[in-house]
Length: 435
Image (tube, rainbow, N blue to C red; front, side):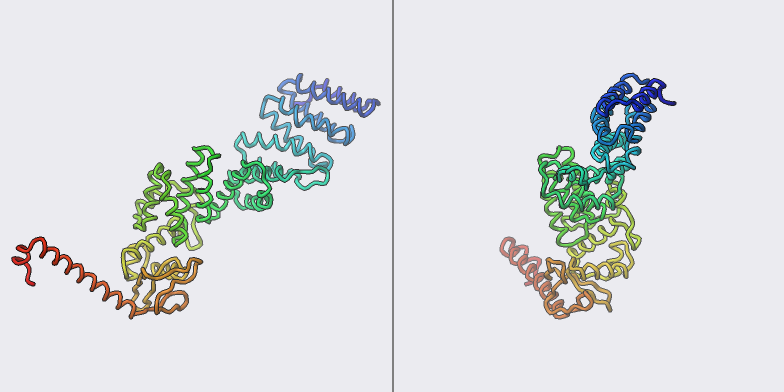
């Protein structure tokens, strides 16, 4: 459909007029009103396209065109009731302005803001982000406040995260990081922290993401429903985090938060993780159904984040139950081969996340409940032990001493029982026990 002849004639008439720039500007403004008020639905878009061609192509001059485009972006666009037509016209305007952006930076940014809003409303977040990314931030023509820059970066981040474009979103997070300390609006700080938590989550930095989510879930300025979602995210990330002292602290914090009881299924898994109880394959499968795609993605070795987290947790749980265990038996417990189980244990011991030592000849892992772990991620320290390649070697003297202590403990318990029976039921002792 082509533009109305009347509109085209009116545009030509003003263009060739010998009137002053001010008078021609007034005529163009009147024509802008006429187009939005009198155009039929079929000719509205082509009429605006013909008008924009004339204004942006310097028929009036840059200085005189700016206030007209200001009015177009701030007032006239909002009067177009059909959102699809408004989007088409705004999109045409930004494309037309692109070659001359250095003359119309302010006008372009206003139109892009409204166009991005339309794409966001439609659910096309990638397109909205692309529209906003083209806004000229660093400009010598117009001063832009740090708060406005921060708001734009956060808006771009949020749109990119909606379509899982986390790599690009992180770029804008880094830009916003340098401005967040200057934020005046507390909403910007909250939104920035939300984006940061989601980026940490997507990068599988689950421990940091959990702490950030939990902090946000305690913020009274956030809606209760949103806070409940943030708490769920904190619980999920804590469960997926690598086993070790730092994760144990995060689990403890969440376990003591009474609000987690409202999320029954997650609470059960959280409790098992916190109390170092073994997690069954059925429980893992049920939990996996609640995870997002990036949380189920495969790692370099072919395993998933969840599988690795559960293996490490069950290994840590086994260390609380057993004093020592063969690698074959441990493999059965973890649903791994003996070699894979030994490798998993060696890795955790080397990283300071598990206390123990490995007898590589006998294929036995000794869990040392008395070892100290360097809180800064260093090696486990066992009295009299020696480290070779990050794995503790045998200290049989220490093991024998522990064995003696356990035998003495059993004997002492039996003696206490007999003494109590003698005191309370002497007839039973005389009849049944030989002292």
